[in-house]
Image 1: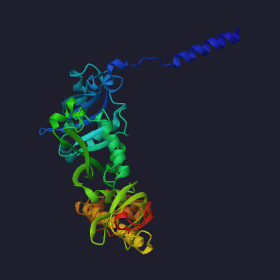
Image 2 (image 1 turned 180 degrees about the vertical axis):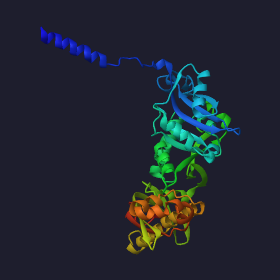
Image 3 (image 1 turned 90 degrees about the horizontal axis):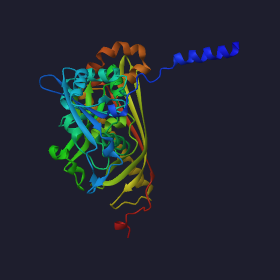
Image 4 (image 1 turned 30 degrees about the vertical axis):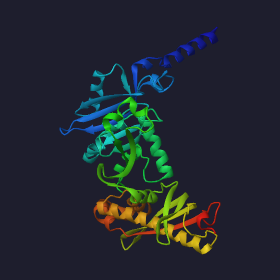
Length: 402
């Protein structure tokens, strides 16, 4: 009998530890925010744009006339003196609670970025719903609101399209970078590295891009296009870098997975295409007589993807000559990126962090003067070792093979 009483008492104690459903939220009461856009007015107020998914129009919706029955997203805009106030004021326009647990993208307007993003990142990090793994991108030439309003083909939710494009572009081309909220906060807090993020531009008609007809034609009236890298000094956008210099930044950061390098051959520009399939970059700091310097060692391996010029790829000497040209091109891109960063006094490469890890005691003397004094004058040596792994199924181009 005593044993049964003990069991009952234990069960009652276990019941007191169960939380139940006191904090439950019904799905029909939640608005799932997929992306957040942040701009700032001339008066200094925050303009927040919330891209909310319409579940019924994303999957399983009836098809009418070849298109979905409605738009897959809804846009809600709110203004406030701070981001918390703006998010609360959005409740006046919505019949549901904003839910940020599935927010995967933060779009920051260029004007907002130039004023400083430290405050808005603080809000995002403090939220118990928001994930710091959400990607960060800077709206270039347009506001974050205009970017999030565009309806996109293939991926119905434009936020998902931007995220996937960031991922695939970094992996296959190497002039854009996939950055999240946590990485931005880490780089802002670091005394030896500045943040860098990709930019997104809107090509075409802004007004037409917001209409459903934008995704009902083979060539949309408006498209979102990744362009340029945004270079930050502390938490403020200072400059943009594009093209080969942008790829030079990713070479140094060891972010290049695959890319294509075009080589000049016998006076013809853009003659031979080299497909990079594997790379590794090592940044090594040195200290001599209290003065730091940096060595960058890049190793690249790839295949010949295109060669419509008179060349014999069975000739070892010609292959060696191609490798030298590849090395020269990669080195040129890296030096161009370093020169741009040193002119702007923006250490997006993390050279300061590298010096700190290798020479922590000496770094204490340089830390306060790193970005203004040491980094702009920092000697940087670049060494590139490029190897051609395969030349394809033909050694001589068929146009010149006879």
